[in-house]
Image (spheres, rainbow, N blue to C red):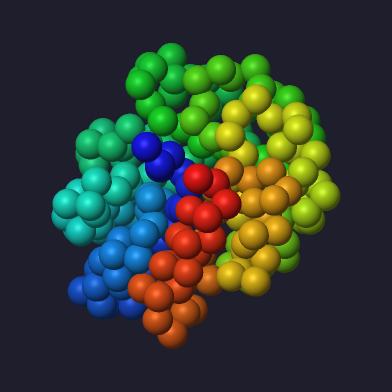
Length: 210
């Protein structure tokens, strides 16, 4: 069974109409994404609920999980156990105490982070943020590069995924340096043909990780 974190698309709806964006997400689902992270910092809680419900209508027939960024309360409204967190001390542990079946991933931007996440046995994955510079990810504290990614992969007790500047051209390098999955924003949202681009990434993932 393919892990849900292996090919994660991170949402970036911005000013795109809802109907157009849902069509885009369906193309990505057809192309092989294994999860969608709902990350829309400018939306209110109510707007996130509304958008999340519409996204689930698209994703559920494919059995593709909707991952919630930060808002653990939102998971109850959207009936999803999948959460991705930034580095906030104690938050993952607190959520897991209340919801032991939650599927949680945590971003890693320091070596101290990885040692801390190693003490949380129930995490589903951790994400090296960011591997390469990216215009789509603000407030980057660390650019790990390929060698930094490899170092994290040696240290981490959890599956390690990668985000930041990942393209078709460097995806295989990222996997060869220890990543067990990728998270993408611009590479898909900026693609002329999102379906074909997703298929290309999926082929690389399948050929290396299977």
